Image 1 (cartoon, rainbow, N blue to C red):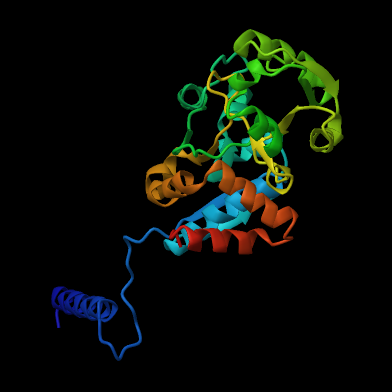
Image 2: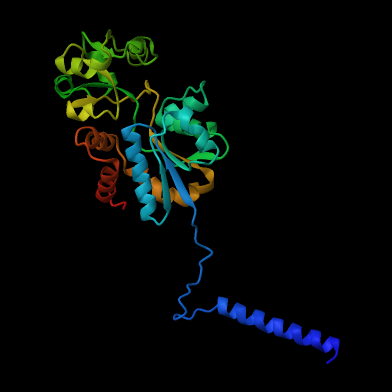
Length: 303
């Protein structure tokens, strides 16, 4: 056999073997035990972080369980600490999703920001975020300074808003010592709402002093479980005395569009009263974030 014919025979043989191998790889024979691979499926993992704060961890767990229910693989990186500790991981892509608070986050990126109302803060925040990060829909739920009175005091004076305090005499405001010099303290109450108050630095005993009647108005964080357990009324702030800090998902722009249909309905369903209730389940009921999140998702038809 000539050299050229030998080479031709070897080439034909190699081609036939390759064809058989390819046919074997492409086989969908149900008895073969091989399953076709879906190359279009997204197998990436969503890494979710949280602050070292029970309320923030509960929201992060709600995000996690909702995404898992939608078919995503989720990695939890909870209890990290404060912004200085976790923000680098968000900016470098190590964490994809984090429950945040609009006003405080805006001030983190723009210390000269002047917006205070929820919509203005949200708009300013979107502009202030660094490249690679964005926010999904903000929630009605907040975790921010708020002025509270007892339910009895609210009924007695027909109070629903901070503005209603203008007609009440002899008010004493209580809170942390620094509140006296804050822009939303006694001076802010006078300038924005025309409300005159004396001030008492009550610190950690603020709610106890309010219930006892030593003070009539208390600065309490709006998601504090004591608002429910002590039967307090949070006064509305229509003029934006306080910096709005609505719960908002901070997310990598790379996955924002992929997960928004799962996360945005959570933001819409989470109310101020609902967030307080979740916190009560944690602090009073001693339930785990996992159990609290599962029950909330079920109750809201989001699981």
